[in-house]
Image 1 (cartoon, helix red, strand yellow):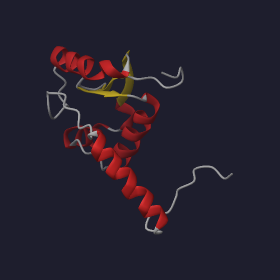
Image 2 (image 1 turned 60 degrees about the horizontal axis):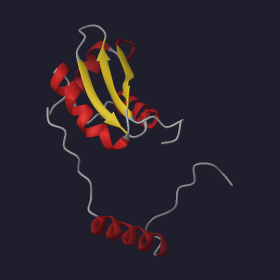
Image 3 (image 1 turned 90 degrees about the vertical axis):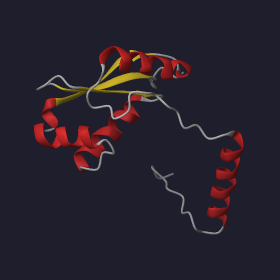
Image 4 (image 1 turned 30 degrees about the vertical axis):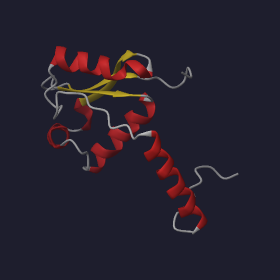
Length: 129
């Protein structure tokens, strides 16, 4: 694991009523910005969290890493926190990972490569070269 990329368990806490959401991530910084963007845009997939965010406002929510752990421990540690803290904003209380099989990943890769070749997918360049 790179020192600048923190994998771990995080919480989104409403400081008005102390209700929380528990999640896990392989890259906390990236996940932090994703949650912030979705909530600010009003399109977060978790309707309970989005409704609370709309009601109480951005200033009343804190997103923080509560445990740094190895990637292969994320599921077990996230389940531990969900079981221990009973987070009110989590829709499901069981951690399930949807990891595509090796065959599925290969098919997706081939499809993406063909999309680039056929001009159906345009490469995105974050920074100019």
